[in-house]
Image (cartoon, rainbow, N blue to C red; front, side):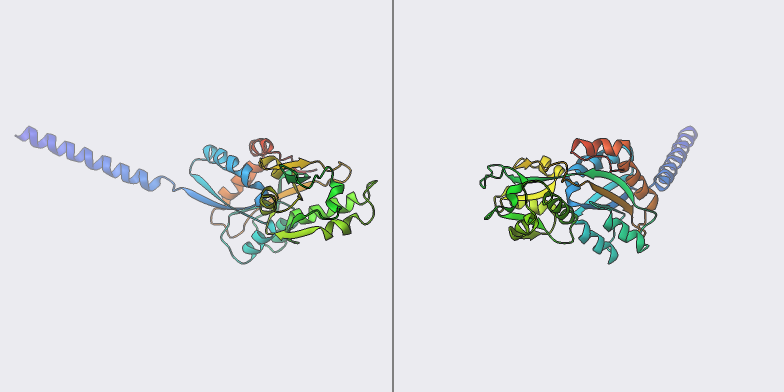
Length: 268
């Protein structure tokens, strides 16, 4: 009986130590960090692959992506929206946050892009070249004036106006054909894909991501490079992890994933 009692006491002691050890381990184990990333709409498809790749190499960090127009996302951050990282489709919006001292550190270029014309897969308007964007009756879909794709597209249109055969009034004729201004580039692509517009100027990556549109190349002499900048938001409660994500995306691993979706290295 004494032996049984001693054995029972020993087992109880071991169980107590084990339970305490488990409790200590649970206490010591770091909790999962959730990063909120505000990202340009044109990054949505690529990030659907990049985020899982990052998470698999960084256990304990999960990433939630909130896509939208870079200009609108910047305003949300300025108004206090909770975000850890901001990925912009241009340099201007990221630089604005740096200038306003709303970031932790400088902007980091992480990707590049180019522009192309898209038409519905059936191309009902019979568009054969960017010159047709200014043809009477063609319905051009664009984004809002503050959205980065609009600013890039305006540069392309003015460059095209200087190309042989386009005419100095090409930009004015193009603008007269714009029938809507969408919230972001994803909405532009969707409208063209549905046949609610005849054409649009978007990023090459947007054309590549959609099976419902066809791409018509813009002459290299008129195309413009797009630079994507990222910043860590200064109010982030997870600054180290936020920097880890941005550094990963801008590094070789992140760029390898982005390249699969048509993104280029950031222009020098």
